[in-house]
Image (tube, rainbow, N blue to C red; front, side):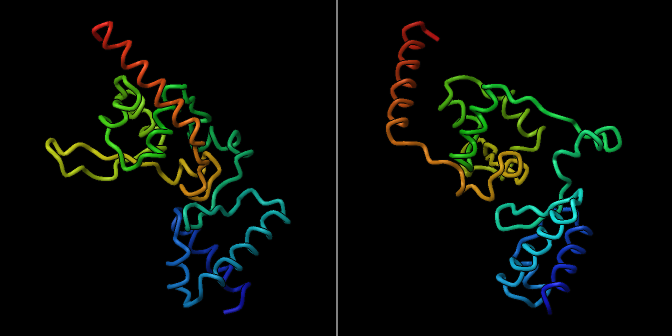
Length: 191
């Protein structure tokens, strides 16, 4: 199949599903290689940009998805009843970073790192579609395991979790010392 035809098939499939589809699945259904899918998807995105289209093709964790350009959201919000913006507080960002780097993780594990109850922050992150339930831990009480979503990757502009910045070793030690100091203060205060 030539690149133009393959690009048209990719566009049709992504439009019809309305969701992210793996490059592997697209290669399978079109009887193409992953490299051919990547080449056709690059052409498709290039065409969208050259024509000034309102949609774009995004790569999300080895998947492709059509989406509306973010600068057009204000025009969609009234029609689609999309929340314009959600506000991430420092607490929610802290919780989200723990989930992103430690996933799969339980609320109890998040709370052990943060040192405070994290129910509200985790629930809001799930509501915003940035975090989702991944299953249950095989332990007493079978706590829910949480991880990030494709929406998280899109919102933070990364293709996969491998693209998240690494924490410098000197900062890890700083964070550990701060956490130990906070824990000691709470112990001294009887909290």
